[in-house]
Image 1 (cartoon, one colour):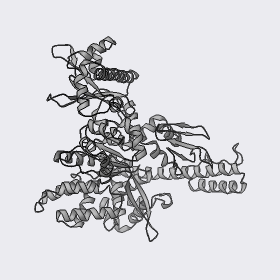
Image 2 (cartoon, rainbow, N blue to C red):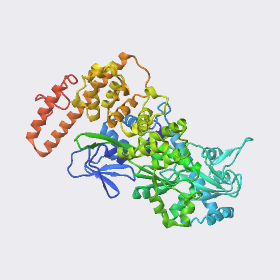
Image 3 (cartoon, one colour):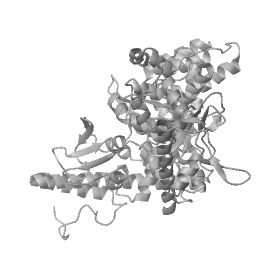
Image 4 (cartoon, helix red, strand yellow):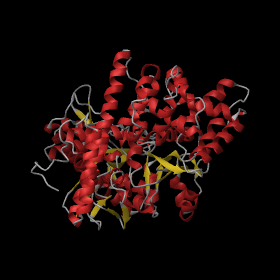
Length: 627
């Protein structure tokens, strides 16, 4: 398995988010989180999660490690399976056909060391040599403080074709290795030359502070104005966020991250004390960047250029976020005692309206005390999106109106609650002069495949996986819905007591109605309320992209999944009873022990088709195991 995949999973999954799904008692205590250990019985919490180091430790039983260690322990799986499961949860694609060799990891470390050495040299040139005078003048003109020069390790590349190469050669770094690190370019006629010349240098570090590349701002009118390191083994512009290594602690403390566009915007914000600011490297946000930014923050504020191009870049960033941010599906009690389910984004996204022609660097320097108010005034992302996409739509042009709806609907599906969703549906309907029901109908059609497979789905498969990890029962219900005409006789065999999700039970009861035997897929959703219909849609999307199968294969698969569901339920209940016995033993409660043993006998009898031999959790009096 590639080390890159492991790193990307760690970037995308916060250990706190993962552990909270297994440890409901986990609560914030100071900078850390504390709860009851899932690996041993305890009444006083001794299980600590450290967000900064992304590790956990139990001071009771001594277990500890990172998110992979936790998943391996709690799920009782090996590392390979843990990586596979967590990669699926994070939307990370594994390339199992191209494992990384140890020497590749050594090469990555060597390239980082070469970049660190070059960064030290650039910094020295800026501060200590006559060749850096032009760079020092830029620093002075831009009013960058000495503290920021040091923190961001700013440097200068002299106007020379080989100064850096000569320095590296004096440290036994060959030109070929410098080129691999992105510091040198190869001549057509042979040999190499310095990539960065006569430029103010901005070292680019990853989240952990490793120097992986550089950005160089040209002096005068030289082009390109900004030159970055090329793609290398350690530098991928689409995965990096400028200043994140310096902003991590401030982001956690503020529970908010502000994203600007340029290096200077971020540096100026830090200089004036606003250290939860990072830069997007001058491009539209990518999923990998969002995955790193969102950790430690429940609020993301975009403060990008106010011109038309900048606004479209902001929109592309918003569409990326909608597919990348984690979301929860949470049960919400209704007045009649039932449950409805809402998907809630864990992160609030807002947009700052910058003055036309102004960037954050200029705005902060002119009136630094007004920056907090500007950030506080950020508008919800959907207000921004609807304004931008409907501003110039000709309401007499059906194609233009359809395109606007198509662009906005995937974002509507991310709204935290139905009241807000209804508000924006009404707003969009008024702006485009169409009925609200049309938008609701299109929202449903755009989110599923089947008859509407030619239209972009509301959520990518990776994003769906981030929203909820599919259980065996979800997969079973998906099969029964999508292939109901083939499997309607199997629906009666599904034990409702084995179904955990109330929505799935409702769908089973619907499919048990003989009048639905000729229906399948979303045709079954006719007459459903919105919550149940949305849930049915999300289940059917589980099967998206699967190759066609013979009817006999579909029925066999449904039976196998039904069998697996029963086994999982048996194992889960037996583990709970076993844990109860262990707890009762510790308390000396013999009555509880006897009661739990009887429950184990009854459970084993109920599931004897799965376990004809005595359960591993219970043995009779002839067994050496005693409770």
